[in-house]
Amino acid sequence: MFDVLNKITVDAIIAPVSTGERACCATHFLKMMPNDLVLLDRGYPAYWLLNLIVSFGGHFCARVPNNKWVSIKKFFRSGKLQKIIRLQAPATSVAKCRELGLDTQDLTVRLIRIELDNGETEILITSLTDIEMYPAEIFSDLYHLRWPVEEDYKVMKCRMEIENFTGKSVLSVNKADDLEKLCEKALLKEFEEYRASIQKRLKVFRLEVVRAGFKKAWQERDYATIIAVARKIPEDVLQEDPKLLMWYDQAVTRMGGE
Image (cartoon, rainbow, N blue to C red; front, top):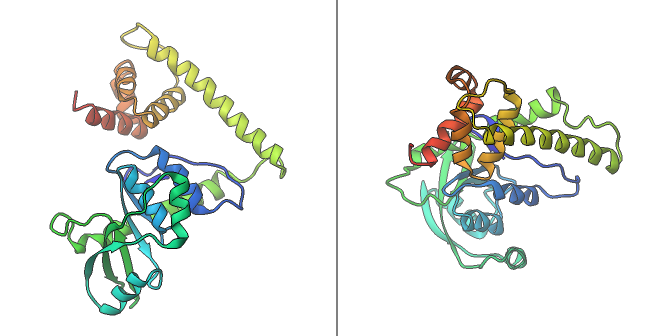
C-alpha cells in the first residue's frame, strides 16, 4: 500500500507467488483509515474487494476493463460521460463475501468515461458518487496520481533489491524476514524508552528509532505518542526530516489540531 501524496510505502508484505494480488491487496486494507481513498489499477476490481473497502469506511477509484461486467459494457457503448448504477454481486464474489463476513447488497457506484490523448477510452468506477462535490473532470488527474507506485516498485526491486534473499528456499526467505523483524523489534524497544522518558528534551536519540516508532504508532493510530515524542526532539531535526514531519503534522490534524 502506497501513499501517493506523501510518496511513502504504508504497508508491504512478502507472500508466495501463488498468492493473488487481490488477496494481498485485501491484507493491506487492515492499515486503512476511515475515508481513505484507494486508487486501483484495472487488474484489481472485483465486487468483493470493492465491498471490502466500503466496509472499512473507505472509498475507491479504479480503472475497470471495458468488458468487465454487463453494466460496464452497456456504459462503454452508451458514450455517456458518467452514470450512477447499482452494482450487483456476481456469483463469483458471493462465496468470498460470505468468507469475509460481508453482505452482498448492491453497491451504489459511479462510472466515468475518460478519453485519452491516444484515442483510447478509459472507464473508471468509484464510490465517490456526489457529482457536484466530485465533478467528472477531476478524475483523470486523480487516477493518474497512482503512477508513483510503479516507481516505488522499481526502487524496491532494482535499487533496494528486496528480492535478493540469502537463498531461494522458504527457510532462507523467512530468515531474512525474521532478521528484519528482529531489527524492527530492537528499534521499537528503544523508541519505547524515548516515549517513557521524563526528559522534556531527549539529549541522545537515533533518527532511525524515531522513524520506526512513528511508523508503528501511525499504523496503530496512536497519534498522542507521535506528538509526545516529537516534542522531545529538537524542532530543527523534525523540520528537516520529511517523514517525521509528515507523521507529526498528520497526527496533530487527527488529534484536532492540539
